[in-house]
Image (cartoon, rainbow, N blue to C red):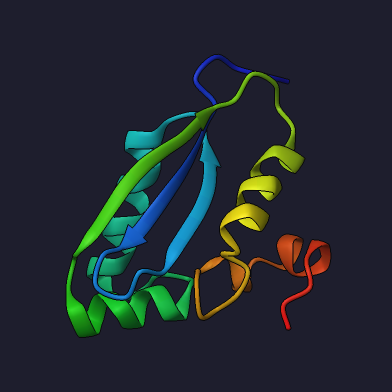
Length: 105
């Protein structure tokens, strides 16, 4: 069910250019979770953690869209558009949901 404020967002590492696309109802809280995990060395996306460890906390968070309906295909469309399923471009390669939806070779 749609909740006002569903946000599709991107976290970009400015040095490497890699991007993560996600969706949340509370962007501030979700970003806090991402950056807390990175600072603890415990982020579930190894490449994002490696970029943080090597180059530091040089990330930019952007709102891509305030979602009008709850539809994971909309998030997937952004992942596809930005090609963040490709580990050379983004961090969404680890998410099995997108690995099944998009060709990664």
